Length: 113
Image 1 (tube, helix red, strand yellow):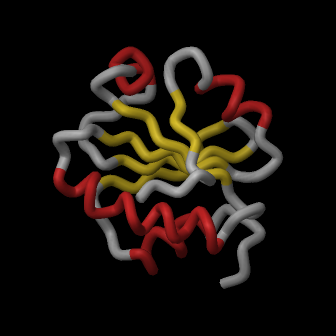
Image 2: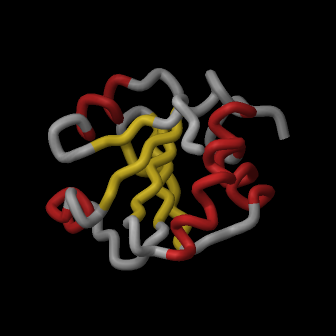
């Protein structure tokens, strides 16, 4: 079950959401057919709850938002991009354990270590 704290972004909503956020934004580039993407889905749901207010977690379906994925150079999925003040500050490609993703987020947020 997907967390209601995770926002689905598309070509139309992406820029406004990223640029207006007062906290870092984690963007999960994924696809419905991607097994590793499905693996990290529940992890992102958990982190959305645990880190609520410290990071905004979002998802972009690369199949329905190909122009956006291409613009950002997404070549492999899952791809996690972390934006801060509207700019990409870090990237992580591939399915990773919850601890790795949490550390990736903490590196650029006010979340406690």
